[in-house]
Length: 155
Image (tube, rainbow, N blue to C red; front, side, top):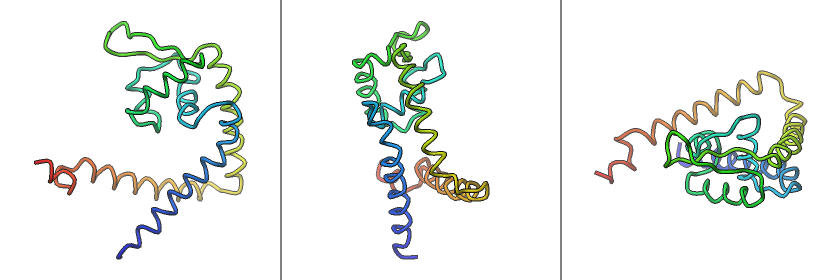
């Protein structure tokens, strides 16, 4: 196979970057970055969640999450509160301004994505889901397997 996989990985990365540019106009015009929008979209229509839940449900790394939430808090879009049951954890929820931002920006991003994928049929989505699902499983299996090369050096 040689380095054939690099061509596919590059195409995957180009698709992600292109989609972020495509969907980014509505996000940028609202004064948000992609990570900030990810938090707003994840918290929308919820009573809020812990940092751990946000980390699990967003595409933001744990190291970046705190800074993104702090910037959203400075903009008045989220509020952080100590969890009643676990004083070490914070609970994050949208403020009224955050809810208004979600109700304005999220529908625009969804509508633009719907228009982009309008030519696709169910079989197109199924094929993409199957292929990406296989790739995700392969990556997950390798990253959690104690015999993978990255774990051998840790012994």
